[in-house]
Image (cartoon, rainbow, N blue to C red; front, side, top):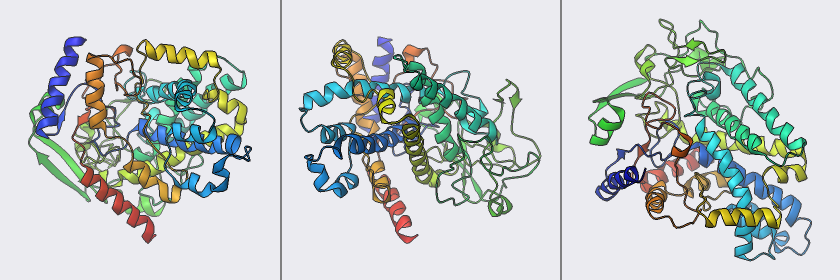
Length: 467
């Protein structure tokens, strides 16, 4: 393991100091191999959780405390960007920074477990090709049923006052992955919807779906692109040159006009009963799309996924940030609904918001012994004011470049600090090098292009203003 870390570090340093984009096998977690300005499942989960937590703390801690200074200017609280620590400190002004760190430790590790099992959906052999786990192949009833079933585990464990909530956190992470994938893998965004789908996770029927024998995409609207490979792409993708698609209007007009749901197909996906499902031939169904998706060259060519801002992996990359916005809002809505269902006390129990001194100290001791976050990033911020805060949420997510190189060196020279995520699943026996896994791999490592991201954010802001 140590030798691998040294190799990854050398790869990283070469890429970093030459400012060359490249691929490395060490996972910088992303959905569908994203570039550094893409928003990942783990970031979406954390952003949605911060919004829910800050609202929860406002209602249960700040409002009842008439002496809390936040009560004098609540608009400021909702408009500003907050980390988890920010909200906790405002809710508990009597706490020192050290106390905030102590008492939020259990909550952060609970959230980190949720985020870990969210990411694992793309790797676990039982789910990585399961169409219902990703809302692929038009498996929408199964997709919604999966969320309903996983939610039942969460609800049962919490209502039964279980002290070990590992299964609840595991199920919550898995269902959030499926919920979030709906917006990047389906055509919900392309249907110009103005809000999240409130039926998913509530009913098996979540909308009118295109018929099994109905064409949904066309070759028109997709441009085939070819590019030479870098040495890292040659090593990780094992194919060269790279052939991929830039698709804009490849969903058939009748699908849009009739507001029919569809999602992309891949080769050799699995049904819930372990059957094989592949993209139909001679029917012009949409593909998922990616340089790793072999179905993307079967008519209709291209694909419709919005997993990243990189066309190599996402033919609808131009819609990535809109899909992210829906996914964050859906995550927040789901967590808020859990709070309504549980009540405040049990919601706080689920996320260990108010741990006992013994529980808080136990986590602190584990951190001192080397316990680390896999994905939770303490400096990620969110605003509760969605009308103005969403774009800032994207802008303020941490640069993966800095975190990743720091985490690599911390793995070589352990510091005992938990705050830098490891992005490491190796201890779980996960194969991250399966390049046929279109959802999870390859993991693109790229220097952060701040200028490009700012332009995308500004464009999205202008789009919202013009609506």
